[in-house]
Image (cartoon, rainbow, N blue to C red; front, side, top):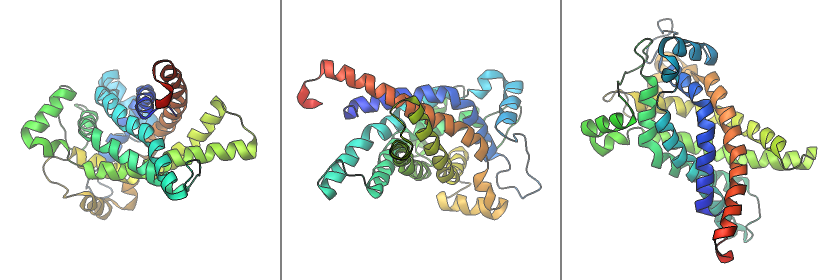
Length: 307
């Protein structure tokens, strides 16, 4: 890994490249999570029926601008989230492993998951206001509205309106759900990636390179989606609510399951999977390459004692 600052930069750059390609499916996922909110079964609209159908409906009615709503916020959020997640993971893991096992090269699943969750929670807290604005921008539709509608001109207008109406507390609405969601996902993302990587090298004889990165990140992306989707649904609803429809994470979870059934927490799973698989593959694969470039740059400009 590069230095902490270098890994932060590398992770942010990689995540921005990934989110450019996967943002449309994120828009569909959020709208599917919100459609039929707290409505009984049989009375729920189905404007968006899946990743491909959802993309086609939005593009047909709102154009490319509709499918890429909130992209600016997504960039800032991804820099903060994945910069922290990829930048702080290895330093945290190395220090904690040294403290417990006296050897920083020891691999412990528990330590890896703890550090993955910890680095992700830091990133989620840092980027929460931008994810809030992004969610509300993506959920807005003048043609196929679902959930509460927030008509913001852009990200800055959204953040300004939220701050004027609710203050700093409003900007951090739903941050608890965001930290739980990202903690769940981060606790398995990097540990699963490195676990899969080690096993593929050991048992299949794969060598370091794009094929190994692709296979490892695919396994990681699937596990992340399964683990992270229920809190992701709760977070989307908490972020998008107007007023106090939900009192918190557990109130939202209880109301959703009671009214819409247990599977409601997995609404939008397919577009989430369609987003997170390529997003994880691109983020982790690009992170490998950007880390190499950052390390080369650091060797040229930093003294050896800091590397």
